[in-house]
Image 1 (cartoon, rainbow, N blue to C red):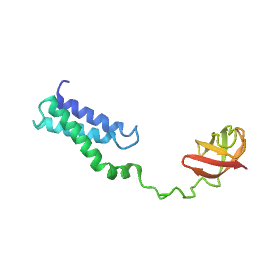
Image 2: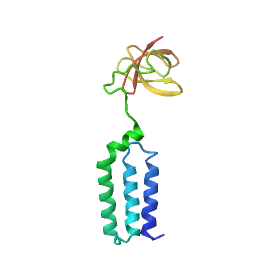
Image 3: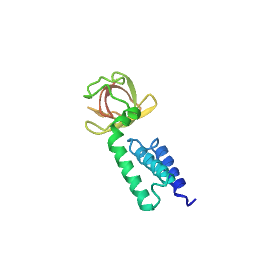
Image 4: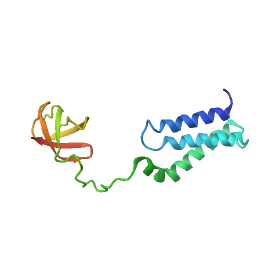
Length: 146
């Protein structure tokens, strides 16, 4: 298992797989860099550890800075809400408070569609109370009593 070609190939495959677990579309470029290093080592272009390390670093960084903006849209997609003004699908829907919302400016939790989200309200709302979503700010919903 001391074969550098195999080691770079395995490292590349693992890094590419890690991209699916860690968001951000960054790790995949280091995985491709490792695969490129494996290929150049197989071709005999990078025989020493120094040249392999340089190839890995250079190819990863070049790929990251030149392709990330293109590839990111494949994984993340584009938002139709460029300014954050979109009245999303949740506004007006009913949710259930799962953790008390103590008062203005203090987060509690609500459940909607089987997922928990941060929530704020203008007044105290205790857990178990149904609420109506009146808007959102990022990933925090603003709610009011039903």
